[in-house]
Image (cartoon, rainbow, N blue to C red; front, top):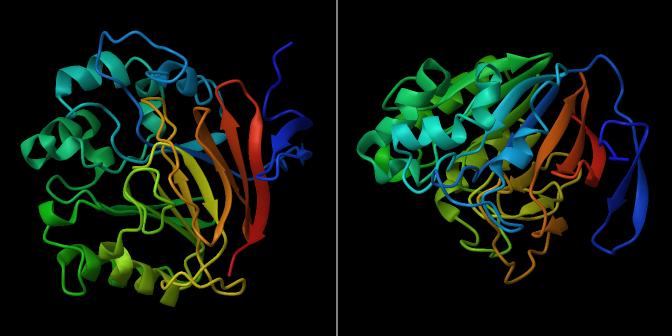
Length: 301
């Protein structure tokens, strides 16, 4: 019998390796699902360790409780060509296109202006040439950012996207808030390591009480303790970051361990499912085999 992640009990493996029981999510609150680094070039044969975008897509299709699918960048390898999007991503994750709220990755910008990405996703990707936007799910405010700084006028204090971010947060600072873009600020070093270019954004998000930041880029799953923009643990005001680069294209072997890392795995493709309650969020990392490998709950600031 196949074990499903949304049943009453699922098996979870912690960093220490001890299995624990994950309770079923409460009914009523909306769910979002997120992952990046998704679809291989059309025609490549799936194996256990690559090109499993169809397997992760099955965690999303036919699940009405999922109100939004956050595609965390590098949706289509190797360069986001429009025909590739239609033949590979489109036949898998594209089955939930109407729910999808994407951000671009660095691979999409291998084409000038990420033109394949913006043509495929259309208005769902935000204004063409920018790629940042905001929306609401339940009582939560969600902010999609374009982390390809050199392509969109920078990510510094005076950059157009940064000015928009400040303005948007001033208007929505009373809600639980989640932000996401492709490249993570903090990482253990699976491929890229910490990226200080996003320090300005983290300072702004922290100052406005943002609760969660999602990213991909490294092809693994990592969950971090709540921390400050400087990487200091802060249980009261800190932001919790998740890396979910497990959408299907392949894996990256970790090369270190960040001081605030709480959970990590790099051998299973899957998606992060977040239940967005009015004053808290529950998380579950669900693999293609419908196993829950990490879970928990945290109140909003």
